[in-house]
Every structure is written in C-alpha cells, then in structure tokens.
Length: 473
Ligand code: ADP
Ligand code: MG
Image (tube, rainbow, N blue to C red; front, side, top):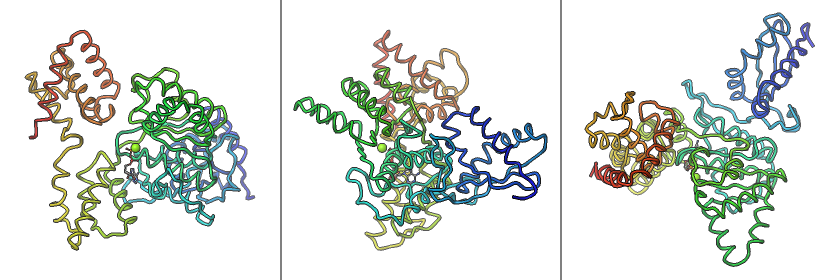
C-alpha cells in the first residue's frame, strides 16, 4: 500500500450508489474492484476496455462527486483493465451477475463495435459438448457484433448466459425483424449449454402453440407440462405469435410460474414492446414485463460495416471494403437483409468465378437496393398516397401541424403503416417527423376506435392499401 489510501471513501461511495441505483443496474456495472490509491486518485480495476468506457461515460462524474462529498478533496477515479479468471471475480452482491466480458474494437469512429468473443474464448480450453440439437451452431456471441444499438442487450445476454436464473429473470428481448433477437437468444442458450450443460429448451411461440394443440388432441398434456417444466432454461422466440391464443397463454402462464419459482431462467423475444401486444391476458403480460426488458435497435452505419466484415470473415471470402461500404450505406434497417445481399454477391462470385468488384456489386444489388423493405412498401409511399388522397401535401402529413384535417390522415397513415409493414412504432415515429412511439400508438388506437363506430372507414383503408401496394408497379 502506498502513502495514500482512499479505499474507505470508495467503499462508502459503493454503499451509497447501491441504494440509489436499481439492483439490476448496480449488478450490471459495479463489477469493479479497488486496487490502490495514488495522490488524489483511486484506482479500480474493471474486466474489459468496453466496460471501462461504459462505466466512465455513465458513472465517472457521479463517483467522483460522491468521493468529494465524503472526503472534501478532489480525488479522481482511474479505471484499470484487468482480466480476471472467473474464480477471482468479485461478488459485488449475492445476486451480482458477472461483468460484460467482451473486448471492444475501436473502429476509428466514435462508435465501438466488437464481438462478445472473450466470453467464449475463455472457455476454449474446456472440452466442448456436442452442439445443442435445437440451437444453431453459428448463433454464438463470438459471431455477434456489438454496437451502440445492441450493447445493453448483448451485455445482459452474456450476464445471463454466465449466471442463468440469477439476475435477469425473466428476460425479454424485443425489436424489429432481422435485428438479431433469435441470434442473441440462442447465443445465451449455446453458451450455457457449452459451459454448464443446462437443460435448455428452445422453441418458437408458434411451435409451442402447435405442440400444445397436439397434446390436447392426443391427451398428452401431462407430458407436455413435464417437458417444459423440467427445463433449466426455457427460450421462447417471437411471443407476439401468442396474441389471441388464449389457451396457450394460459398454459405458458403456469409453465412460467413453475420455472420462475424454481429459479430457472426464462427468456422471450418479441417484435415489439410488451405494452403494444394485443389480446394477451393481463397476468401473462405482467410476467413478460417482470425482470429485464431490453431492446435491439437498428445498427448504425459503422456497426453495419462491422457486421458485414464479421460475416465475411466467418465465410472466409474476400470482399473489398468499398463493397462493404456500399451495402452498409444502402441497407439500413435490417441485419438479415444486409446478410442476404452479401450472400447474393458471394454466390455470384462463386458461380462466375470472378472476384467481387464495386461494379458487379452495384449491378447485382440494384434490385435489392431499389426495392424497399416489405412488400415493396416504404413509409414514404404510404405517406405520399395518403396525403394525395386527402389533398394534403406530403410535408404537412409528416409535419407538426395538428389540425383535424391533417391529424386524421396522419393517424390513418400510421395505422396503415403498422398494418402492412414490419416497422416498429419507434421507427414509425421517426418517419413521421420525429415523433415518439407513443404518438404512433395513440394514432393507431384512434383509428381503431373510429373503425368501430364507422365501419365505412374499413373500405377507405382497403382502397388506400391497394393504392399503396400498386404505387410502384
Ligand atoms: P430476429 O430474430 O430479430 O428477426 P435474427 O436473430 O434472425 O433476427 O437475425 C437475422 C440475421 O442477422 C441472423 O443471421 C443474425 O446472425 C444476423 N445478425 C443480427 N444482428 C447481428 C449482429 N449484431 N452481429 C452479427 N450478426 C447479426
Ligand atoms: Mg427471430
């Protein structure tokens, strides 16, 4: 120990923060260990560079403020990256989760992108199990690129995989199509399976429903119940499918309770926040909302480039950087589409035995880039068609004015967009002049109410939908 010892202030700072932050937040970020003190500084260790950057950004000034209050001196805090073996990992609290364990890679911009590889590399020496029959082998953390759009979800996922049933139970991962929900969920399953041999069941909500229906038909519901209630970890993908499936909801509710009471990990994915699900029993909704709900957002340009680079690396092919940039620039909202473009180029190169150049990429992907997201329908088309139909300008429809003559068409456009595209309300809000997702929800509700009172509105909607779908053809 040197001349200075501020450990007592550090400890008290932690005590105070523990009472001020939620248990989850504290467990997630305060996996730091006091190392030593310098002249007017406290040095603590953290498990990775990514972790250090996050903690600095989130808590440095708050921690320093507390130490100042306690000591009356301007003592700074320094973070030192120190990789720990799991045995040494500190137990910040009995319920503490292990820290985010991956390293970040600076991409030369302010955005960080890395994969969660460290968590898995650590286990590399262990004899690995055969792959899990229900999980995709390539859906592992090592192949999952972490960017600002998914870092919270990814870190929570790693924490869960390392400590199933402990900190974030249940966990619900939500977000639009193709943003990595299934990948992340299965990565948790894969890691827990490899590390601990947990009894893991992965199933889509659709198959869960089908199996349950079969079980009723064949009078084997007891087997069904036993199967699901004996899992150590239950992964149910795409729970939005359960809307209106009342009996399956009921069954899942009881399965949930049995697993939850036994501290077994439960993870769900959903294409929207739980609050936006309809036709769902209140008690099941409250179960979904319990625990941790994390969302995946569309990746930024830099993260899209990093994802493409990762996919290229895994496939062991060569694609020039300018082609990566081209794809990343043109496809923004869906990682699956990003990957599909790449697959197309690789297939083309293999067939023609020619290398991929910027020119061939432009040629080959012209259709993909030209065609917008779902059923050739973009939000812009919807807005233009609706505006035209009501003799409004496109700008007004998207704009801030809230007169009745504009509000109704705007709400109608939101409603139609919600019906015929896969955009989330958050994305839609952005497309409608930067509005909040609650505004979109409210707009859709208004239309639903009006539909009940005014059935003729239905045919207007049908007509508009047809015009929208025909718009580009
Ligand atoms: P969702 O279930 O949300 O619709 P998926 O998990 O099926 O999306 O992901 C679609 C595709 O995109 C998968 O092939 C997945 O590997 C890939 N993907 C999504 N996010 C990432 C990411 N952050 N890093 C690497 N690949 C990703
Ligand atoms: Mg999925």
